Figure 1 (cartoon, rainbow, N blue to C red):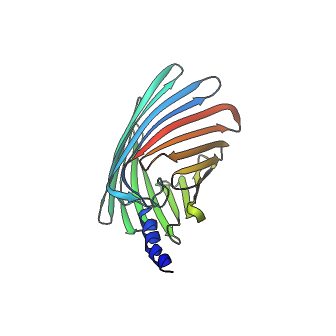
Figure 2 (cartoon, rainbow, N blue to C red):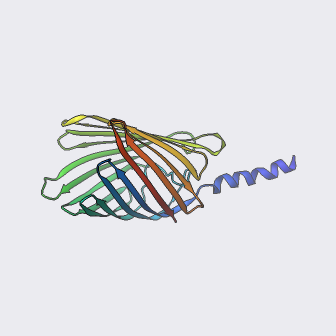
Figure 3 (cartoon, rainbow, N blue to C red):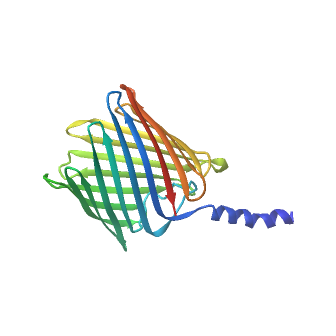
Length: 266
């Protein structure tokens, strides 16, 4: 009996320290798209640094739905296709002060540039409202209003919602993510998104991911266009993970999309 009571604090301590903390996230990915009559190869590099530590929810790549932590990020894509190549650069950041959020981003493509900037207010730790202006070179500026709400369930479980409309109300979108801890150190996420515009039919997409443990997961995604993907992620240690995915489309059997990637979290 004394042994059981002595072991209890150790078990509790183990549960507490099982959550990891990270400040930086870097991804390097290669994607090959084979359309049967043409191929597109893409090399991508993305990195993001948070000025405060983010704590995992169990799996090493799962965090809170709302992250009110100042950060900067950047990325580069090189795209090689039959007959030519192109590249794209992205830089941006988010700054939180008190309950206020300010953010901006620049995307520079071969033929054009796009800018976005905005501000938000964190009414509660679980509700964030934002206004965003998006400007694509040689086009009119578009304004968007967005709300993000996190409903905390038991423990680390949550269900989050994000809704967005533009200033003309001809673009409307809603997305949601559910995270839950299962028994035996396993986890599950499910995501759903809906986009409705005055110029196209309703679009929907969904994804699920099952975590065998904090290090290894498999996932699948499917959308209204009948595109699908299967993917897997494995952390070899607390800092380095490998990713692999395969996708295609039920209406276009010739399409094969393969991707390999590495993630480094520090």
